[in-house]
Length: 343
Ligand SMILES: [Mg+2]
Image (cartoon, rainbow, N blue to C red; front, side, top):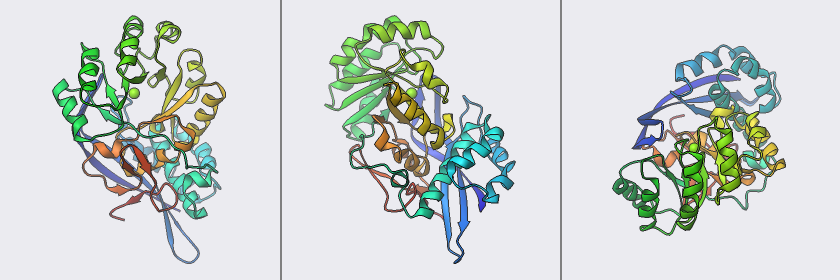
């Protein structure tokens, strides 16, 4: 087994602005696990994590933390991605982004070795999977309309957190019949959320993502009791232990693979959420086709998905899942289906 790293600077199609960040370039790390078969053929598994200022994660920190456990990874003394995850976790618990990239690569490799798409390797049936939304970042309302018109889509996620969020949604609604979902990225109060929800519902919004600050459980309890729209946790649900905290405070959770540490914990979070009647969404973090194709494997388990990362970058170094008006189309290759274009 050989571990290697590929660094990229992903160019974003639009300056990406949400309530607490704004950027044009997104550094990303792709982790490769190469396994040589007895006949000399090489099978390559790929995983990815983008850097994240908010969490203090850089490509260098991910490479350093994974290099520190190179002997464990390359020993091949693990029989499954889940086993590697557990073996690596004590060293990587401060760097879930690195653990995610490694875990995706291990899953991709194991499914490729088994000759199956990863979802099938897990025993899932992908005949009925949710559409992905396309995200409209915060901008002037004219530019938000233009971004929407640039890519006609049946389902948009609108980033909010401005001084007049309802005006934005009203204006966007004048230009499309698409379903909306909104993400306030912690910018609202409980009173605002409860007050906005009826009009948002009339404007065709299906749910509100993370309206309140992550620690505001008292406010969230009010929102849960009084909002006419379902509310989905994002910043309030980062790691596995957070799922239990969201029960009776949120209607669902949005899982990010890089923040929770990969597909292995994400599947456990999904199982726990389902057992507690929470709806499940998976979101992305500006990944290339490597990370997005990994997310795609979870689709049969999800209610909602936000996997538009590859639609928001202009220099995707990989191939993988593709999209047709919100519909996700799996790649022909096994594993996650992702391939680096230069390998
Ligand atoms: Mg969000």
